[in-house]
Length: 346
Image 1: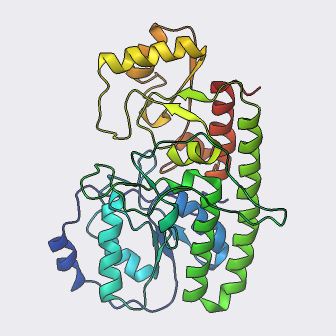
Image 2: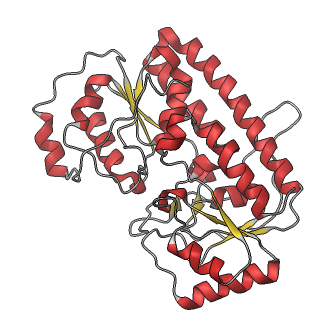
């Protein structure tokens, strides 16, 4: 990847209300109909879109380094910029409300702009926020390399759960990720038939890399001495748990606004002691100035262990950007080693 060539664009503050979007439309020129560039709604989609398009389309991520795509608010000019570029890759889910609003505007007012929903075709693979991981095994493919998706019902999504009940973090499952990459490839091919073969070849190569990542996780969890780990943060990893049959206990739950009470923390400490857990997992996005988040310290004060970060990959950090780490690199360099330690899969 060439992060120096495709630097992240910091988004401005302020939510786009429906009226603001409508007010901007009169100012946005008619798109030229060519794919001069593209935008993706958060880090992982941006990384995948770039790797499928390569030099054919220059993709940008409007979400700034250190931020997540959900709960983010763009500036009023973003709709104009995307319309001028020609393609927008997003997830049609209320967790990314700003992206839904922009996609709706583009689809209704700009016929020449290509809008690609990475979740298209995955309705029967999406999990409820309150989905209970069954801990069972899953079929990851036949001898010819095709992948089979089992589990889950069809739903929508919202992080505050006020409108629907779907967990959108499908990108953390390396198997479902393959479907999203193929959807991006198909969408780009429809929009730009001249480069369809390029998109298909690039996507095929990346799907192979995702399949190898899936196998790496399979081997890790097969070697694990325990099936439960502790995460000091809100749980974005249900798809990973469902895929590989382990439990990620958290005293927080799924909502990023939730605060654990003392009873939740005490229960977690008891679990750490009972299971002999020596490594507590946490989000590096909550790490400030090299210090563990308060919840991590609260658990470590009462237990004998240390902590390691795992990333939800809806955003990236400057230190990873400097290393040119995309989705695969962050999975392999951060999440795989952390789960190996937390589950004692040495």
